[in-house]
Length: 433
Picture 1 (cartoon, rainbow, N blue to C red):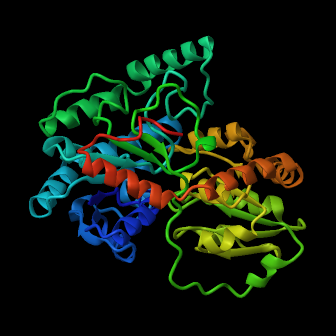
Picture 2 (cartoon, rainbow, N blue to C red):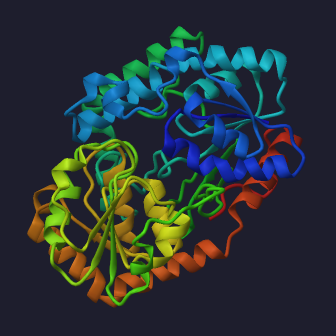
Picture 3 (cartoon, rainbow, N blue to C red):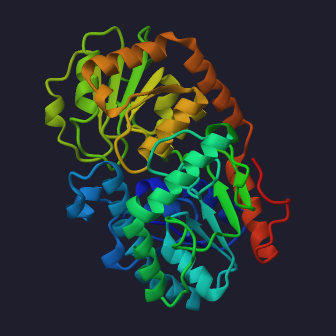
């Protein structure tokens, strides 16, 4: 088994449990990614394969790795991010992976669903390819709007007209440059043009598409890619050691616990962290803030008496104590919260965050704040609503039960084994929810 992932935490986390399960079942697993993740790769039981230094931006924020992205928001952030992070790196990733395959003739390739170098390598060699999602289902559908707009699904006649018009406008206007970039990228590596829509003309679809969530958190579609399986949450491996902070006993007190996080890549503390801390200062709640990276936390100081600030606390330990999570909508964090029955307040800003937020709203598991409502007053009201309205907690708990009913690593490993054994033919009759 050859695993290939983009060198970013959100693309690594969901793969860890699957890699460990494959290794536990006796397979030889090699994993191509950035050097910052070597320890995690080896903890999962895989052999680390480093990507070339020019491709390896692991351990950096997006702005550090791609300085030209600073200040981008909305569709511009989405399209330029896809172009620079995923498309323009793919040819050299392919070269790396073809070199690995020369000395390690894998039976199949397992990649995150935006590691396009792995897609090119599989297409060039004919090796069966599986995707493991790192975010929402990325392929288009007549029942959903295109990605990047944060819109809910609609399969009604009018809804399908809306979706078709948005796809047409996206291909011809919004995503035109990205679509052309994909054509150029494929031509650069000697692969034929794909006459499909934007975001789908970069790589052929895989034989197997593993989506790391439960069916009730993803929009329903009548045209799922055959070979799509919703395996359940893949939330990473718990750390070998955990030394809790000195205030840990406060989590078992009488006050509701509010977790504020904006993931591992966003670094603008003024967008979400600062206004939420100020909104909840002096309230009868315990506020835990996790920064995830080297943020300018001095902007949060002086900390109110009810706030506890940490760079990182493993979700495996923290989330069972949390009553509501305030987040910018990172996919892995949202799924981790819902797997523990924690309802959400989501303030999306860029990347796929609006699309994740749309699923939170559709599933009834939290409150979504639009850009103009991200203020101290808006955040204070949203947190109070989620804490006091039992409907959100009931929906989050229902999703948690669905997560608990699935053994995601085992199911993913079984499907990958079937793909390798049957040369890409998925034996269970197509898409499953």
